[in-house]
Structure formats: structure tokens, C-alpha cells
Image (cartoon, rainbow, N blue to C red; front, top):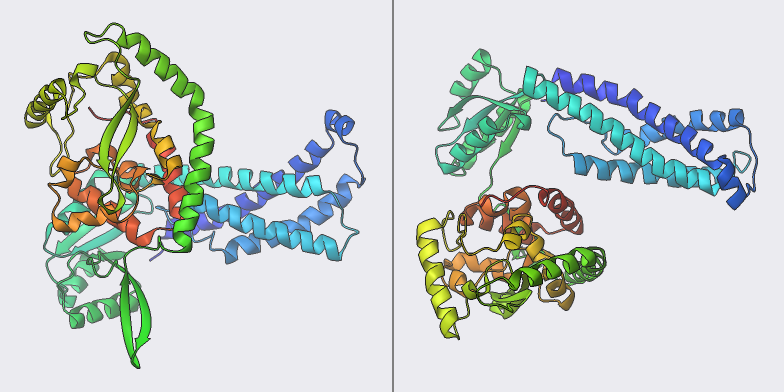
Length: 477
């Protein structure tokens, strides 16, 4: 159910968008008439500001109508900024095409390609900024005043309800307040809670309710204007494809969309993205290489390599070497085929037993004493992983995907964990932008499987943008 405050903010958003589009149009006109630009490129068409404003006043409502049709006024407190930005970009682009068609049909408006393109770019920037400011105000009122908070009832009696409850309590910005939680879908009990506390949303965390119970629950929510959500079972989140077999309907479970064109699009994104990032990050990589080389001269075993190759398991269980900047002292780098490497491996096992802060097959050594001074810094900010861009360029890894694990870690997998090996491993992924190395392996696995089953090109872009933001947060050692 949409809260009253959300309706108010939705109403406020309309004049703000109109103002931002209007300012973008004025800015484009002003930029076009900057004297320095006129020297570089003289104007081919001259039109007055008054005639231009008449066109702008016609154009602004068109943009607002397109924004409304694209769902940009369904303002929720918990809306995602990046998703909204993409919607603004799409809707403004549709508006741009509408204007181009209108100018083609009615050429007496004006014919300035610069104003059209500049206006489009500035409209996206201004509208996005205006919405960001409004969202910050809305979030602030939500957290500090409880304005717009959704009263939620949790149903279930398992581990999932505990996790959902903790997430809501630990993060007020999610916009929820738990009014109660019950073990079953008793409509009588739900009516009592609704009358006493009020209910805006119901989240079903238990998939063991019978079809009859769930049907009654869904009907009750529909009749009483209550939002109904549920945490699905594994089968319910799987991609399904309908078909006909021998005149009978048949459902095929698809492992991943990364087949056919999906795989081609992802590889193109990896190849272009890694090439661009290698060029951009090359000065940083050169500086890190120099610093590692200088520091290696002071190590007890001098002359250690700058790039450390670590064997990992890739897609379909294929072994490959992951490239990383060496952040450990050379004598502690593990190679099972040398005597020193065997000693280093034994020492690492001792550290894992004493200092590992992760559960499951993976390990994470807290305050690792083997790190160099430079190594501690680059590992903290994930700079040690920059050489993996060359793994991506070679086709051994992807920019986005499950993290590649060592053979000794894979050996500890349960059988179902091997789904992680069905696609190329990635430098970043769902787990890294959600919790980085702080997540338990089982939680990391669930996020990676969700990515495998629900991959889209837009999801890769979204995770890439979130990865950039995550890099500025220190890792927990």
C-alpha cells in the first residue's frame, strides 16, 4: 500500500522535474551562445530566446507525460537510485526522439542539433540530481522521523524469518517496521494484528504453507489493499521455459541466460570493459609494480615477483592461474612443488586454524602477519586484483561472476556448491557488492546462484557501478 508521505513526495516530484527540464533547456541555450564557442563553430540558425521559450513550454509537459508513462512517479521510500537513474535516462531519450520527430514535421520550431543534444544530456543530469536531493530528504525523514515507514507482518517459523527480521532491525533505511510475526497464515490472527497495529505489507518467509492457505492469504491482502511478498523456494527462483512435448505442456528449467547471445554479449562486455580498464589503470599498476619491486629489495628473500600467479578453478572445473599483485612476503607464498612452498603452506594452514574469520570451505585470515607494508594497503582496497583484468581479456575470467576458488577450497564444496563452476568466475560479483569478504560462504553461494539464474546485461552494468563504490570502502581484515 502506498503511504500518504509517498503520495506527497510523488506530487512534489512533478514540479521539480518540470523545473529541472526547464533549467536544462535554458542552460543548453546559454551554452550555445557562449562567445568562445561561436568563434570555434558559428551558429547556422538564429532564433530568439522568446520563440525558443515558447517551444520549451510545449516540450516540458511532453517529457512529464513520458516520465509518468515510464513509471517515474511511483515514488517509494526504498526505491533504488541507480535503477531510477536508468529510467530517467530511458524516458528522457524517448522524449528526445519525440522532439526530433516533431522538429522534422514542423521545421519552423528551430533546427539546432547542439541544443537538442545538450538539452538531452543536461535534462538527464539535472533531473537525476533533483531526484537524488529529494530522495535524500525522503530517506532522512524516514530514518529520523519514521515518515513513510511500512508496517510489516512476518509469517513463518524458520531461519529465513530470523534473517529478514535482523535485516529490517539493523537497517532502518529499508523503510520497514515489524509490527509482529506469526508462525502460520491464520487469517483470524492477521485481522487482529491489522486492527491493533495496522499492516501495510505481509512478507511470507515460510514456503511450507499449503496452496489453500496461501490462496486465502493472497485474497485477504488483495481485498484489504495490503502488499503481499514472499521469499521463494529454490525451485521458484529458477528460470523456467514453457514448451510442448507430445501434445503435453512441459517446463524446462534453464540453468542460466548465459547461453547463445547472452554469452556473446557478456564476452563483448568483458573484452571492451577489460581493455578500457587496463588502459585507465595502467599508471596505477605501474606505480604499484615499482613500489612492490622497491619493497622486495628489503625482504629476507630478495627478488620476489611483482605478479603472483595463484592456481584457481574456473568454469567446468578447468584450472587456470589468477594474476595478482603480490601482497605477501615472498617466503610465505605457497607452492606445493617446492620445499619452501610446502613450509609456507603448512604455516598458512596454522594461520587458517587460528585466525580465519570465515565459515565453510573458504578462509579469511584476520590481521595476516605475512603481508608486506605495500601489500596491506593494496589488498585492503582490492588493488592487488587489478592484474586480473588480463585474465578477463584472455577469456579465463569475467568482469562479473562468482569468485574463483582454490582447488583445496573446491574440494570442500558440497555437491550443490558446484553450480558456481557452471560459468566463468569474475573479478567482482553479487557477493562482493553486497558484503565483500564479510559474508558467510553459504550466503555468498546464494547470491552467486541468483546471479547465474537471473543474469542480464543491465545487471552486469549495475554490479560494475556498485563495485566502483565498494572499492572506496576498506576491507575488514
